[in-house]
Image 1 (cartoon, rainbow, N blue to C red):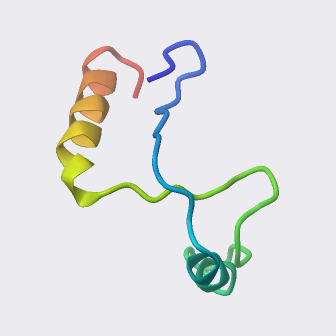
Image 2 (cartoon, rainbow, N blue to C red):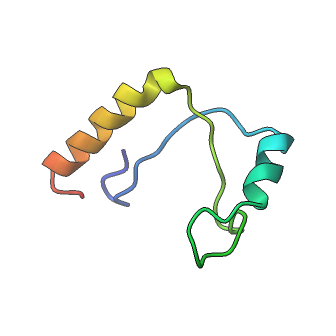
Length: 66
């Protein structure tokens, strides 16, 4: 977690071309553009890391970052 920037930093695998193509053609939130904005990217993380991510979010909330 980057406390100064108030961001959760996640390390994971780079997405494959097939996943990127799928994401690029999907409207994830109604009214927003499809695809990935130029300033963003996606990362794949294994489901076994869900507890780690949950704990990081809980810690951020407890410390007042959320």
